[in-house]
Length: 303
Image (cartoon, rainbow, N blue to C red):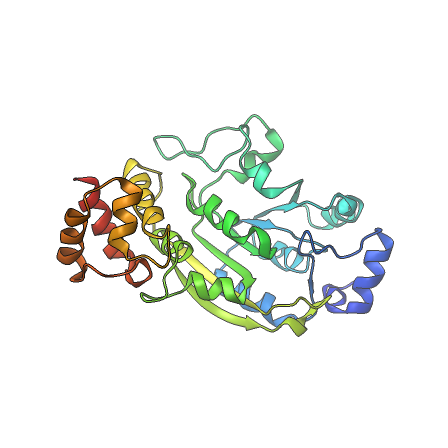
């Protein structure tokens, strides 16, 4: 008789892969957990309730999905590997609150008939695709063991949407987690982008030996709690990121040079603004905190 603990055993995973004609794909980042600890830590960090809706990306055989199903109202899981359809057709009989969406998550989440959008009064829009209508709800959370190659795009998709998740609990490549949670002095465009919308925190480290097949890198579980006052994309957001992207355009250059060339501004004026905001005209982009970027964007946009 199947139990969820079977999904942590490489021998059982190999049997499942054989049964469904699967060879773990490097392209899709298919590495299966063989220990329950990271799943338990993700669930604990998400502070789930029976009223929650969760979006998951890349459920695979459901090591996280099935654990969530007993704790939340609804799970919408995006899976690109269509060979798993027969597997999930059986599992959804037992777990009717699980909905599978087949195809590339990034593509499906950006289609014209389904977006994370809200109306002006804060209510969710109806969708043309009725099978996805339950996804667009408020509030919701995102939990996922993300394939490494789509991490940045997934973060951008959810954090820049009009209808952001309450929080995201993600297992990502350790190096990416370190970049996301960086402090001034080691900031990057990714760090500023995430920290503009929410507060990221490292929850747990997951060594590569906890996966089958074993990946080449270690993983880290992070939580990103989104700031509630940033619900709708605004002109201020676009101006902010226009300045930030210009600032990080050339890592070896001082910030004033990047801003002057990237935004077509007078260099002397940019230096003056930097002296007023950070006290140093020779500062580099990686040294600024998000709040300093915010003030800088306001000042530069007013020029």
